[in-house]
Amino acid sequence: MNKKRKNETILVVDDSPDTLELLHRSIEHMGYKVFSSESAEEAIEILKNEHVDLVITDYHMPFIGGIDVIKHVRENYKNTEVMMITGYASVEGAVEAIKAGAEEYLSKPFTDEELQQAIDRSLEKLAIRVMKSEQSKKSISKQYGIIGESGGMRRVADSIRKASENILPVLISGEAGTGKELVARAIHYESNRSGEPFIHINCRGIPETILEGEIFGYKRRGEESSNGDVKQGFLEMAGEGTVFFDEISETSLSTQVKLLRAFSGEITYVGDNVTRNIKCRIMASTSRDLIYLVRRGLFREDLFFRMNVVNIALPPLRERERDIILISNMFLAEASNEIGRAKVPVLDEKVVHYLLEYSWPGNIRELERLMRDIAHKVEADTIEVSDLPSYMRFNISEESRLNRTLFEVELDHIKDVLSKVEGNKTKAAELLGIDRKTLREKLKKQTQ
Image (cartoon, rainbow, N blue to C red):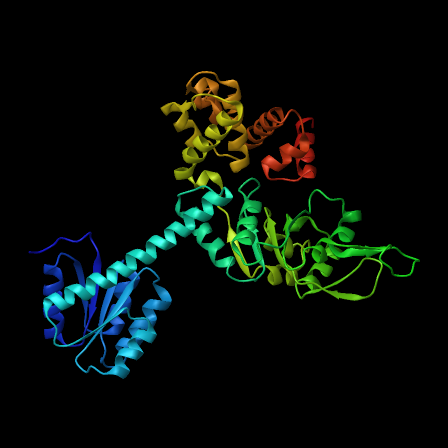
């Protein structure tokens, strides 16, 4: 009895038209979607344009053989299984196929039942591997607070897993509030360095006059070196752990020169000339366009390329529509639990629409503050549009909105953000993704 499958797609590659036709009809009868190819070159083109779950390839083919097909699939399509069939069965051929990455090796002639069993085993192995991969991504997300089911965040979770398996430098880019520090911590605690320190350095928050000493350590001038007059910096204190430079774009060019040496495992204390070795892993983040800063001479090109070995780009919240409501409900539940609310409030359908339409300049951080504020202030079980802040609601006509200049729209938004953070310009600049100087200049234009 034919058993209908779950839409798995199989690609059959064989240079014999008769064999290819026979396999195509047999596999199609089993309930699978089937593509056929008489050459490896044609098979490669099909793989580029179609999702394929299993490739069944002949061993002996002209020009490009079955082993090369297996290697190509293994190196380019991690969610595709490979199975080898051959009319020239040998132990050496089987070993070669398995080493190349084939999950099954089937010798001609074979029955439909033997073919079915081999296909079942291959697809079962694929399903287990995909499931483990998805579980790994989900566990990383849940464990470190990186919530999201959108394609962008699935790619981030995959990047975290890969980065945790090596010690290469990592540059995490993304707008303010997208969770760059969470990603850095996830990489560290998923790695084999998790038992070592994770040191977070806020390059924007430490005055430049003391930043170098805190990073590299220092020796007091005019004194002989001893335990009492030298101080270790973060890079040395981390041991074999991780040092994370948050907003590395804010460091001066002189500090960047010394950081370049640190990536090679060497530092020198401020006020000293002795070279010391360090063993920590270095990661960094930026919310600014470093390539733009390099072109303007504000960031060293050699340092950029030295630390941009692994790049993880976090998507802004406005591009994660699938995640916005998921994250909102999570923050509402957390805040409700903290204040002892018996029931977590739910979002009205119109509120969902407004949340999805809003641009979220402050990203996750802004959404968290909003949901926590609502959970504390709104006593009803349902959150209505009127519970949202004024800057998120439509309170003026479409015509008047369209008649406003870009400067007026931007200025109004700045005022709303300042009002939300009670006039704190540092917090406002952080939410807006700009520095305090830029914020002051924009506010200054208001009075001109």
